[in-house]
View 1 (cartoon, rainbow, N blue to C red):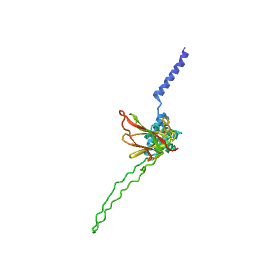
View 2: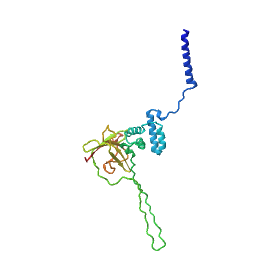
View 3: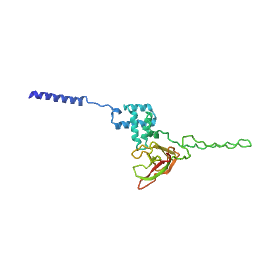
View 4: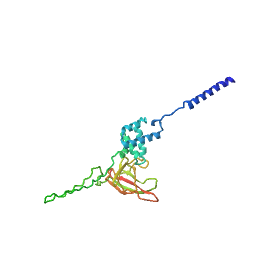
Length: 272
């Protein structure tokens, strides 16, 4: 009986000594983990943070160090997939930052062109300056000289309206309730009524312009695209060219309760 108990007692003593050493004398310590060792959600957050920082300061050397910490062998594809996830939510600054980062990594898609396009600027006139010279002692005073007003040269939209290759088929007002944001929702069709994807739709307003590409939300329609409206603006809609206005004066006016109007437009090509 004693011969059987002795090994068990020795085993228990060994386990006790081992646990005591591991827990009390030399416990395991953990050092900081790198971004490559965390779960995918945190890697995505790290990538978004790096993209936003690059969009803010343009420091590519620092951005490279942050990206290398992920040890991602398919980094351009990862950035593209993350961009598609956020761009599907509509225009937003995260998608814009990811588009710029993807472009720096050599990836550029049609959807990214919307965010990478140079923002449209409106001309800012310089203040008019006028000066009058004092007459000289001579009998005939010099004429008054007035400087000609000049404008700062900037990129701007042409003011001449151009004909559009599309016509308005349907215009429907829809009441949107908070927390949803009122939108301009466009379905672009070819001459046979099929949805057209990959087409640029321009939204312009007093002092600004933006655009989106159709086809990013296939679950609605291949020719579908949308734009978030501000309640204090009046918007115009055109296709391909910002001056070829098809619909104008769209506003997010009040509707039932505390809702705001959204607008659903169907635009159809007049050419085959």
